[in-house]
Image (cartoon, rainbow, N blue to C red; front, side, top):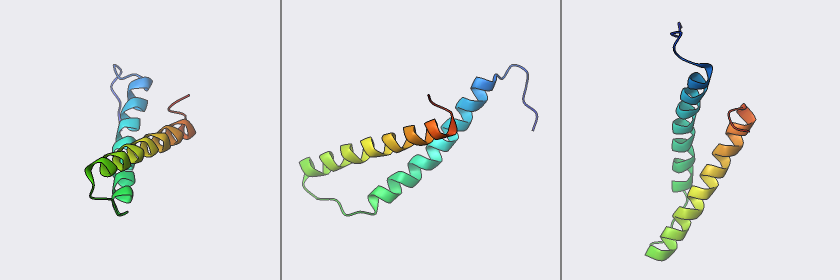
Length: 70
């Protein structure tokens, strides 16, 4: 694969990270949705927010492990 000269290493890392994020986020969301959720609106919203926090926390950990975040 040939990378044009105008593309910086930072751009490549960002694009790879974005691709990884989309794929991993999809996996984590599907994993979270497999668990039963309450039907009460307030409880469902709290569960959604907690799931969102856990997903972002895991993504940040993976990015750090991959050296994409410090």
